[in-house]
Every structure is written in structure tokens, then in C-alpha cells.
Length: 285
Ligand code: NAD
Image (cartoon, rainbow, N blue to C red; front, side, top):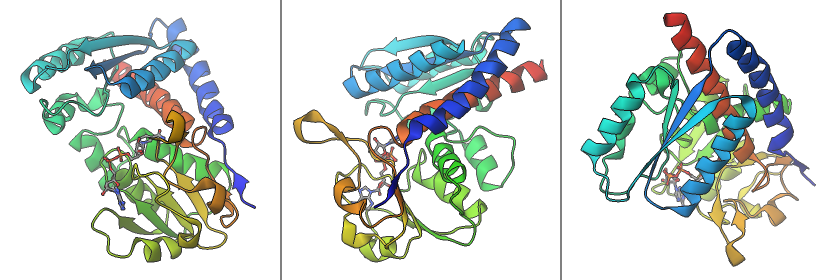
């Protein structure tokens, strides 16, 4: 039976360290500020932003909510982002996704100043990651996955890793991070011909597709480490991941639950990125 890798204890390690560092900054007159741009009335997005605001509040990060109507267009969101970029009290800016179809998402994300891009989605930050520069803000969920593996003493170097999903926010940065950590990485997506074979080849399998029960027990190599990033609404509106947890836990060596797996680490890494962004901006002044 697999070891269940719960995210909260690991997330708390990050949050405690952030809290100490933030208290020191506040004493020296600097209060980190994190702004959320939330467009429309999507309930899940509101819940996610609420959770992130709560975490920020507990650490002493001042959070700002820029709530815009569903009908917001690209020019208008860019104007708001420019204002947040210019505000010295704000060190981090996050545009909660998904943005409505009336907005060019990539244009909006590229408008966020790279120094304030706490989601790590600006081409400058993704470029820093791709070119293995340490100075950059990198995607929170991907960082959370690697942190969890390291903290759980799971060796990455020399392992085969399969990542399902190639999004800018999870799959792509994670595949780069795992490659840098020494894994041989296969990235799967909707056009992958034999997903099951790619999964069965993996010592470390990370699933970030957004499809409930996409990964079943017969697709998992016995003893593999399975990280389930997916968050879906299942039966009775209950949250579930992309992995058939009940079955896969008897094949894997380690597995993350949903909820309570990678989610808390994503929030913690967002706080760490905000702290890092604040320190960088204050050092530049
Ligand atoms: P996305 O829709 O942008 O990307 C999904 C990726 O999965 C795509 O590259 C797609 O090609 C691939 N994919 C989808 N269905 C597939 C299938 N049947 N076979 C193979 N590949 C398939 O989504 P995203 O933003 O990357 O998020 C993925 C999931 O992770 C979602 O459920 C999201 O809610 C969740 N998520 C969780 C956290 C967290 O903190 N736990 C953070 C971000 C995203």
C-alpha cells in the first residue's frame, strides 16, 4: 500500500520560513503586497483567490483584490495590470485563470512586470527557467511538486518521469524542473498516442490534465511515485484528482491525495514567490 504524501506538513515548512522572513521585513518598514486580478464570477476562481488571500493575511502579506466584470476586454485588463505594475506597495501580481474568452490571456500575462510575476508565467521568467538561470520567479505548482519529492526523500536524478499535461502553468515548467533535477522526462498531452505505455514507463508520474480518473491502476508501474495535480468536481460536487486514487494506491509506492496533496504546496509557493519578489524589488531600490 502506498505512502500517502499529504501536502500540508510540507507546505507548513515553507509558510513558517516565509512568516519569519516577512516579520523581519515588516520590522524594517517593508510590507509585502500581493494583488489578485479576478475577472468574472467563476465560483472556483473566487474560492482559490480567497484561499490565497487568507494565506497571505496569515503571513503578514497585504493582499489587494482587483475584481473586474466578466465583460472586461484585453485593453481594460492591461490598463489595470499597468496600474498594479506601477504601484510600489504591490510586489506581486497574479491574474487568476481562467480568464474569460473576451481577454487575450497571453497578452494579459505578458503585461505583468516580470519582477512582479509571482505565477512565473511571463516569457522572461519561463525563459529563465528554460535557460537554467536561478534569478526568476517560477511556477508555483511545479515548484511545489519538486519540493514535495525532495522533502519526501524521493530521488529524481536518473529516474524516468512522465508528466501528463503541457500547460504553461503546470506541465511545461514541471517538465523543465524535473529534467534539470536529472530525470528523463516524457511529456504527454491530448495528442499522445499511447498514454498508458508512457505512464507505465514512469518511476515518477505527475498528472496535470484536468480529467477525473484519467490514470487507472493498470497504467502505473508497481512502486512508482504518483503526484496528482488535477482538481475536478466529481460526484456530489466532491473534489477529486486525475488519478483513480482508491485503485492506484495499491500499486504505487507514494501517492498524493486530492484534496490535500499539491494544492497547499501551490499556495505556499505563491507566498514564497511573493516574498522573493518583494526582496528583489527592495534590493533594487
Ligand atoms: P490545462 O487545461 O491548461 O492543461 C491540461 C493539459 O493536460 C493539456 O496540456 C492537455 O493536452 C492535457 N490533457 C488533457 N486531457 C488529457 C488526456 N485525456 N490525455 C492526455 N493529456 C491530456 O490545465 P492546467 O491549468 O495545466 O491544470 C491541469 C489540472 O491541474 C486541472 O485539473 C487544474 O484544476 C489542476 N491544477 C491544480 C493546481 C493545484 O494547486 N493542485 C494548480 C494548477 C492546476
